[in-house]
Length: 243
Image (cartoon, rainbow, N blue to C red):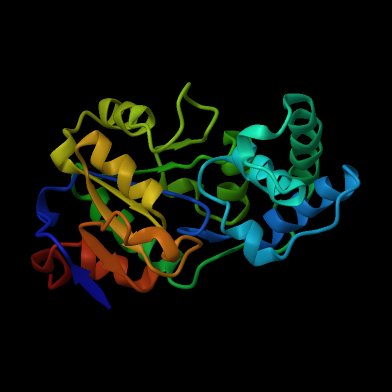
C-alpha cells in the first residue's frame, strides 16, 4: 500500500537515495549478534534483539554506546570513551566477519531496484546509498547481496565528517549527480532518514517494514509504503509504467 501525505512530483525526481539497514536489507540478527558478542567481551550479559534493533539508525558507535548504557543503567553520554572504544573495536571486528551470516535483502527489493534501474537507464535519474553504517561493510554487503551495480555511489557513516540526519552526505550526492533538492528523494525506514531529507530540502519516502516504524511517523515522510514492492508504483511515473 502507498500513502501520499504530500504530493510528490515523481516525474521530476532525478536522484533516489536509499538507506541500507531496515530499508534495503534486514541485518538485525547479524547486528544484534555482534553487539552481544561485544557485550560478552566486556563481561556484560546479552540484550534482547528487539532492544538492540531499536538502537539502529544513528551509526555503529551510537549503537554500541546505547547498548552499553542500557547494561550500565546510565545515559549514553555517561559511557566512558575507553569503554566505548574497546567495545566498538570488538564489535567492528566481529561484524566484519559475520555481516552476511543472516543478513538478507527484503522481499521485493531486487525486483524494484531492477525496475527503477531500467527506468533510470532511459532518463537522467540516478540511485545511491547513504547509510550511517561504516562504508566498508556497507559496500561489501551491497556487493555480496547483488545490489551494488544499481548505485553510482555507496556512502557510509564514515564517508563524511557528519552523519545523518545532518544533510552533508545527501547534499554531496546531489552535487555529484548534479541535481537540485526538489529533484531528490530519500528512502528510509526511520525518522533519521526523513529528517535528513528535510534538512537537505529533499523529498522523503518512509518504509513501514524496517527497523524504525516505531518512530517513522514522528517525522511524517511525504510518501509511506508497506513493502519494497511498492517502490515501483510509488516512484515510476504512471505514463512510463504503462508503456
